[in-house]
Image (cartoon, rainbow, N blue to C red; front, top):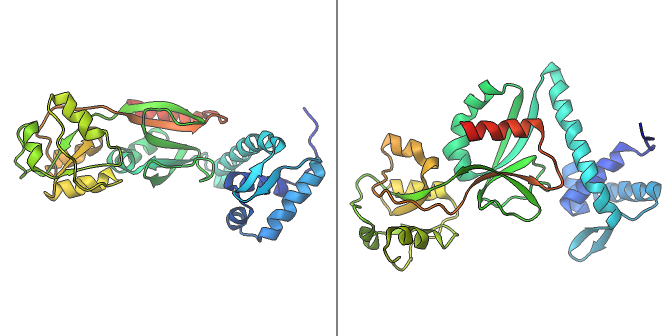
Length: 285
């Protein structure tokens, strides 16, 4: 067993939070202490180690080479401690996973199946926070994030969950029988400008000028489409309940797949057994 240096754990925890937050001020807020207390703990740790861990710049904190070497080790170590404490607290053999989830996947697929997951894996507790596909795993204190895209995010290891074929969905009363009918209807758009052109290309039709509202939420687009305000190009598997209930209809069979849903973690972390079980469950559910 290697020697364990006599370094105060509070200083190490303060360093991990400051490195993750990129700011002594934000670290102080998370730790519920003063900024001066954070600075003191960092200075104390630097003095003990004999190295500088941060440089202060106009853009915020910048870790030195020593800080960058120490940070992933401390982050993994504190995460492991937190998970184990959650498991033993109160005698409950539970592991807690903090997962960031793009809202469409959370509302349309994951949340309705949480009870099934709990029955299958009673030793794992999921804590979900939704986002609009923009997430910083380390800074937000997450174990992983479920995102929509191609699986290519810088500094991230991505594990494919499922594809997301997209098709036009609308209210049952909307008269939509062929792709050409879409030219007279309002087409809701997401911030991904290539979706409608790619779908029309699949049908052999030319995409009309796109002037409909741009929304950053597929759930919002689905709600507006269900009220008859327009047509939304949506990932069909995420809106199965809307289709089964008759709130939305899918009048055209053509689909386009521009991405899928992925479980992502930072490359300097490892897949824990709980994350692996979650991934395998989502793939098989």
